[in-house]
Amino acid sequence: MPEKFGTGKNKLTRIFQATEEDGSRLDARFSVDQADIILHSRGGAKGQHAAVNADYTKALLLLISSLSRASIPILGAWVDSTTVQSLPLSARSILNQTEGSLSPEQICSLLSTRMKDVRSDPDSSVKGGNSTKRIRIATGFSGSSEDLAIRLGGVAVEGDLRSMERLPADVLRRATPEYIWRAVQEYVQGNVQGDPFGPSTDYDLIANDGQRLRPKAVFGLALSMALGQPIGPRHFTAGGLCFTLLEEAGYKIVPKGGTYEYPDSEISIDREWREGGTKLKSHLKRERAAGLAQAKKAQYRRTHGRLLCEQCGLDPVAHYDAEEAEACIEVHHSATHVSQMADDHKTTLDDLQCLCANCHRLVHKVLGVQKKKA
Image (cartoon, rainbow, N blue to C red; front, side):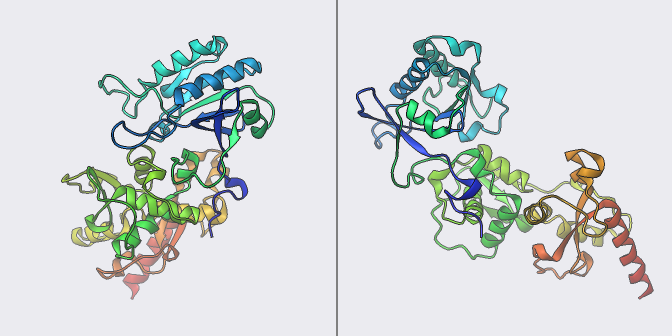
């Protein structure tokens, strides 16, 4: 069972409410992650509903001023919104260490101006931009996170605010390809009823045999499985890191109404032991079922800590002294050979093995010889 929020090494950072010098509370929340301060974004549209973290601007100046008074150096600052967390730090940096010595007013002005230009699409020509985004401020504080929060005048927020807050990237990444694959199977098999996610308006996830699913709903279920508790639409945004993780799990995200076919260029394994165009096409269609290989590898990593060959025990990363060597491990259908699968065959992760490329080739060669003899 996956660990729940607030337990063990996966504990979420604690949320604090900013307060003024007289102790009055501001409508603004921040977190402290070791020596980093994370100011949560301002949300809500005028005329529709009340704003969340409405005192964002006042809180930002208060936090920067508190750091200055306590002589805590600012080492840099970055936009930390979920939609841009997949971008490199250099693309979302809004303050460098040298500028950290400016006055609090100057620092706040730079942060507000620069964060407007940080977008998930760096090439966007749209003018304007949001100056109240979620930001991460790195400091040179050497004490505990709790001590830093106290120095900043933060008051710990009681109760569960997860229904109001977007989850940070490290939590979203716990939806590994294994959980994403399991979530896709649940939707494909019609096992999910009454989920909290609405219809997809712009994009579809291409699942087994071209079936189209709602990307955000799939990711929400996967994250719920990984965390062991329900996750809803307000915990994360569609696009950005959500779509990146779905695509890294082996699925394609396409615009509504758009078509997609897996091109032959995606076939990466030498299959010289297979014969017949029709058989080969059918074999490839089954073997490259979306997300299956990534899901098996993620499951194996979770269970064993790293990818090994289940046949010869090769640890490619240790052998080649390179993380990229994990590419040597391939996924093999060990329970039912692909050529023997019925059209409605459903593969489970336990039906698969992680093999190095050499063992994978040998297993298929042996199977081919045995088939000819039979």
